[in-house]
Image (tube, rainbow, N blue to C red; front, side, top):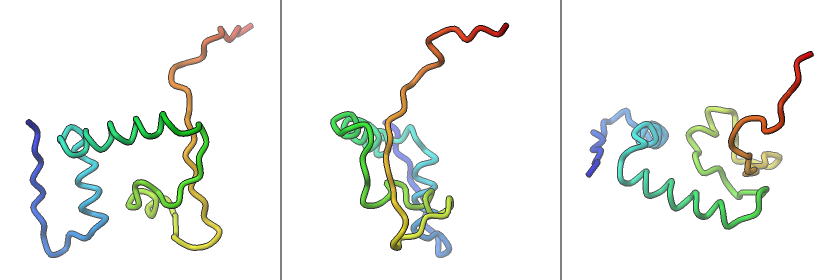
Length: 89
């Protein structure tokens, strides 16, 4: 089993804690969370408007603010490379 024990310090805030948690993607808690989220995303339509970002620490680093005018949309993207050959002359 993979347990990650994060040592909380006085300077470690909420976003720092979340960042540390997402850094250890093989931990049991995060593997379960990502597996459940992936299943939920497959049940929904390809494009869906979210009420709030699923990773608030990352969203704030990218410039998100929880105020009017900011919209969060989850969009499914096909995996894999280009199927049809692209002829190059």
